[in-house]
Amino acid sequence: MTDIAQRIARGGILGVVLALAPAANAAQTVTQASRYTSEPITLGSGGYTLNFNVAWSCDDFPQPTTSAPGQIDLIDASGGLAGRIRATIAGGTALVQVDGAGTVSGTSASVIQLGAGGTPANAFLHGTWQVPGLSPGPYTLRFWYFQDVATGFAASMIATQASDAGGGGPVGGTPGGPPAPPPGISLSLPPSATAFQPAAISATATVPTNGNPLASVAIDMSLDGGATWTPIASDPRPSSPIDMESDSYSFIQAGNAMLRATATDTGGLQATSEKTLLVAKAGQPAISITPPAAAVAPGQAVAFTASGGATGNYVWSGSASGSGASDTVTFPSPGTYSVSAIDSGNGNFSASAAATATVTVQAPFYTLSVSATAGGTVAGGGSYPPNAQATAVATADPGSTFTGWTGDLTAVTLTLSVLMSSNKALLAHFAPLLPQTISFVPPGAVTTFTPAFTLLVTSSSGLPVSLALDSGPATLAASLVTPTGAAGEVTLTATQAGNAQYLPAQPLVISFPIGLPPPGVFLSDDSAATKRTDRETRTTSFRSGPDH
Image 1: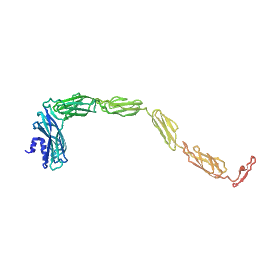
Image 2 (image 1 turned 90 degrees about the horizontal axis):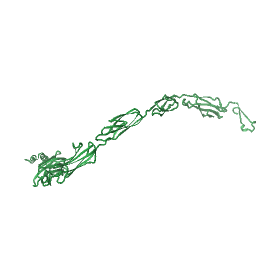
Image 3 (image 1 turned 30 degrees about the horizontal axis):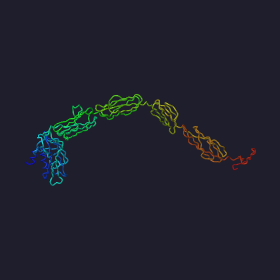
Image 4 (image 1 turned 30 degrees about the vertical axis):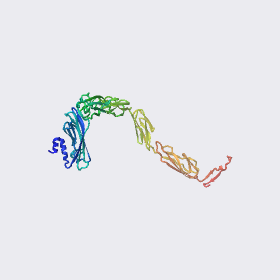
């Protein structure tokens, strides 16, 4: 029988893996170096528990190399082989072969890199070897180290190292000694907890002197007085001689919670610690009311809706009452009102803070309606509180005039103050402005010797006319024209600006000449030059004709 066939017949599945692996690299030659380290142990009356690791490490190019399995030997006091385990990884699964005494459980494996034939190159394996049924007493564990290299390939080395993971030891009393004592366990809880909020819970297990290694440590919880238990934390491979387990646990209901920590050793001995923790009700998120504010008239109803919180158990107060997610309230009279709601909570949640909506009920408003006939615009209409003073304003368009207000009030002023004791309506009336003309009476013949005279200028509207002297040998004061004594053309402009009823008149230009007097004898008083103090004696000179 070939070596491969012998390994298949002897090793089962592991033999298949180990036998086929070299075949994938038949063209390569693998050289191997090996050594082991020894660890003396003592088997108890119930045997021994070994937590072991196997680690594979490699150089940069492990692909041509087939790695060796991890190997641990159990040697009795006479040097004989009492048991052996060999472990490797195939397809990500831990494969462990046991020759001789014991069984292996609790295996786990992880692979980062592979060598030839799918054997591990950079990987890790963990398991527990339980060895019962052997005579108690001294034994030796051998932990093997293998180093495999594919000949002719640089950086192709793969190393395999088996080791004690700790936490194991003899099971049962040691030969000649007293029975093993049970493990110790302590449970640590916070002073209090709140539903749905994390609470730190921990347990510490210890191995007493001459005690067995720890096999498991667990923490569980009961909310029904111990009738049923829920796991919080559990470790099937605890450390020895001390192991601590902890968890940040959120309780799903308020009340008294029972906590229990249990430590079990490899001999089946147990220790338990129980405590009670008061779990308080959880607070609630804020709730809100929609609408948060409203302004209404007396007799008007508002529908409110509550939302938020945790339980939906809404209770209304203030101007509202009852329960449920919504409530409709009618407000009969003017004033300011409050509507409040809370989520009252339940067995696990305390009541929420109150949310409040404010409602303002206003007295009825009165409406002022303002309108206008053609020819102008109005302002001031709208809604007003009772007894407020409103102001209506009329504005005439160009070419129009305001003639007065009618409706609930009458007036002829452009601005009208209105006391809003009820709904009111006003109509502003406008009319077109009337045309007007200017006329004048010609002054007749005016000479340089004509005395001052009044120019008769009138308007068809009867409104006063303004005169302005544009040019000529005369002076003007209002409508009084005074020739200056020189001949020439006098030009004036007559205007009338209009008023609220009449349009401005078309300006009128008035012109007339100032001429010389007709030929004849004119007396000229030159007594100023020859005046005497005697009033009765005066010297008078005479001129005749236009040139004298």
